[in-house]
Every structure is written in structure tokens, then in C-alpha cells.
Length: 363
Image 1 (cartoon, rainbow, N blue to C red):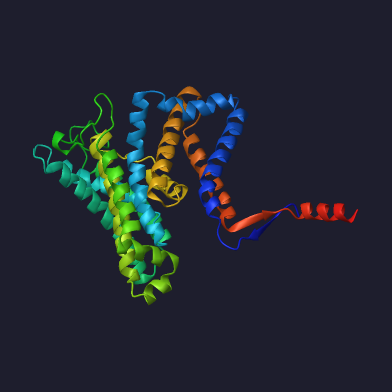
Image 2: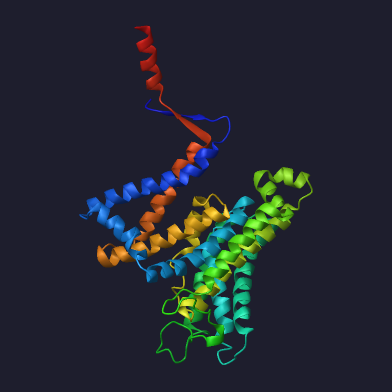
């Protein structure tokens, strides 16, 4: 046997933090090999993907634009995952948040007032939160597996959105394109840097990081969530209401994903279109685990994932690579992360080294 896995006495804290770093290094190495096999210079290709997109100020602002929705979805997922509630539906909750926010914004285009934008954002959060609560209701009342229900709800949300931009929310003056009318100025997020697309959505995301950190580490409800995740029976024995906690965590997660959707339609897009998300909700799952479910770790992991999205677009332009390059790097990162996480609970042993050592001592 070449090697075997031996259980550790306790989980390795060092490997818990080194695992994402090791996964990133292995992804870079494998990506370099892939580019070489495609006939590209590996170093130039990796530079094109990971440095060129942020080599100027505009690129850095675009990084913030893409980071905002990923960070909002991922920080919400950290809350439910801490409770061992597996919400895979951030994508659908983002779409429903964007749809709900757009439904309000297109009906108040001509209305001015400081209350318009907050209402659009709140309705977006409400749309995402209620969509998540549907899965929570199915779990707590019928013991339905939330992994399956949230995944299926993603596709239902997508079809709701497609129906809306082809039907009730379609712009009557949009030359038959599947899109809503442009939002009024009062419903748009303010631009932070003139001449760029970076908007106040990134501030919402950073604020959410702080709030979730305080919630999980400094509040009693955060303590209950952690206990529920570690041992549900112990949580019930302590008097914690596990079903109530499922509803609370799903509501928080869905509302933050809904805010991400509202931020997309009220930010860089300014209207509802079918492609409001290139998969931010799914990418947020990788980000949450890559960041070790810690708000600060998730912040840095979100920046990395946003860079991968930008790098994938740059690789299409400069290297003539297919659109799937983004998904390829995301998949490799997740695969290596899961593989490296084995080292948290297990040590690698090489039996043949022991045999050689025994043979040498016998001589």
C-alpha cells in the first residue's frame, strides 16, 4: 500500500486554515498544466487570469462590483451552515430578491423620494427571505431534505424570473427584448467612484460581514446556532428551539441573498434581465467553505472568487478560451478544498517507509 489515512486524535487546527491555501496552490498548478496542454504559456495565462483584470483602478472597482453579491450570499450561507442546515438555494433566493425589487422599482419609476431606494432594497430582502422560508417550512413540517428542496427552488425561481421579463415586467418600449424598463434614478444605488460601476452594494456587503460576525461570536442566538450545528440533540436538551433556529437562519441567509439580487438590478444593471446572476449563489457555497465559515475568511474568499469570474472573462478575450474556464477553475478549487479537508481529521501514513526503516535497523 502506497499510503493510508490514519484518524487524528483531534482535528488539526493548522490544517483547517492551511487547507484552503493548499487547495488554491493545487488549483494554480493544475490550471497551469491545463493552459500548457491548450498550447498557452502557463505563466502568461495565469497572469492574464489573476493579475491583468485588476492591474488598474477600473479593474479594482470591477472586482468590488462582482464581490458584493458573492459576499452577501456567502456570508448568509455561513449562518445556515453553522447550524448544519444545508441551504443550496442562494442562487434562487438572489433571483427572487432581484425579481421582487424590480417588481416594485418598475411600478414607481416616476416617483422621487429618499424612501424609494430603501424600499426597493427591503422588498428584495423580503423576496429572498420568503423564498428561503419556503424551504424551511418544508423541512420543519415535513422533514423534507433542504438540499433537494433548495436546489429545486432555484430552477423554479429562474423560471419565475424568465416568465416575468417575458410577461408582466417586460418593457413595452423595449423592442421585444426580455427585459424590464430601466429603473428611475431614485431606485438606483449611488455610484461610489465616478466613471466606474462600483456602487453602494459593496458597502452593504461589508456591513453584513460585521453584523454576521457580531451575531455569531457575540450574541446568544449565535451561540444557539453553533450548538445546533455541533449537536442537535444537545441543543434540544438545553431548551433551544431547533425548528425556530432553522427558520431564523434560513431567513437571514435568504434575506442577504435577496439583498444581493436587489443590489444587482438596482446597481450595475439598472433593470431586470434574465442574466442578473452568472451563478453567484452557487459560487457562494464554495466561498463559504473556502473561508472556513468565518466572516473575515469569507471576505477574502469572495475577492478570490470575483477575481476568477473576471479572469475567466479576460481569458476569453485574450486567450480565446471558452466561457467554461470560469466554472473549471471553480470546480477545481472546490475539488481540491474537499480533498485537502480530509487532512483536517486524518494523517497520511506511508507504511513502506516503516518497512524500510525496520529493514535498515535489522541489518
